[in-house]
Length: 413
Image (cartoon, rainbow, N blue to C red; front, top):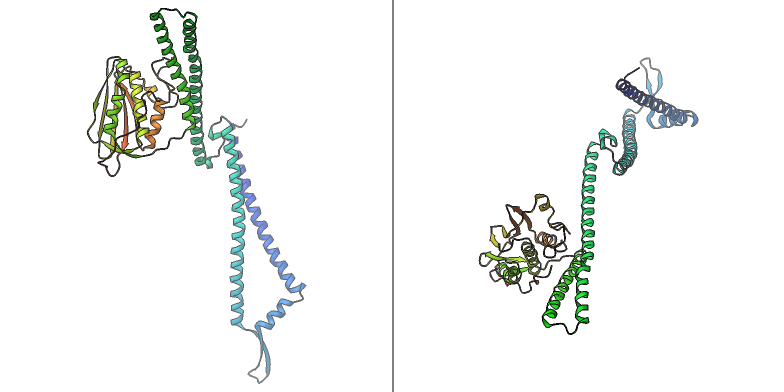
């Protein structure tokens, strides 16, 4: 029995030999066809046309003159006009070269187009086969298609990664909507229950009535928050963020944000410390940028330990403006930091009423900062979580930058 590798090698040699013999046979046939064509053309001109070519040549390029020999005998000499013959040969040669050149060019163009079509068709078949099958690229693409194979592998990997990210995003969104729909029942049931008690017992003691009204109000506020989360999901998918830039006093904006967060900070037992330079200004969209800081501060308050300070700092470099928001809380795992800015991502897996929302706050913040040409990042180590917003500085500074006049309410996402 012949080993498989040897038989495969011998088969390859036989294939190459057959290919060479086939090319040689084609060349021989082409030469024979050329000789037959020339012979047939000569026969057609000289015999079929009854010596037309020779008569024409004789009339155009031959002369007859009379000369006297040494013996005094007069004879007629029939000889060619060599100058005209040379010119004829030159014209024929140039015409032949031009004809052959055009012929070869035309044939090569047709052959090249044919090969290109075959190559495109073969490449398309390979790509379709590779994209639809879970096979290694080496089993689909020949070695001569190594570069194409490499590019297609990269494209397929990128498409698979993007498809996986989209599936995860849709899954997070569906889970979130399911949780929200389930959570809507709890406050609504409580509201109906307490209102029914108030309706059925009009003579209820004032203290008890006030207690039930307070609980009902809290549940209604919770219900409003959940409904707002539904609207936030819809708005994020339907709205396109368009920036309206102007010169803004960032120092004033950050101080104003800290003041507006005072009630939320107090309710959670937190404080805020400011370290912001004077006259810090930039050309930004004040409403959108205020929403960035609003979302980050809400996240910092929600995940801070009670009684701890939140540090809000800002500084500038020759090319950038940096704003840092740091809080003390549970360290965020590294794998969650990588996805914290993705849509519908929430740090807490279980839905807790006082932490997190629709999981869009940080995703929206990242999109706004990116549209400004900046970056946003998060770091969490040893119980300290820091969000850093970096904005590019404009070429010129406006010393008369106006303060932001319309900052979103802190309860707005």
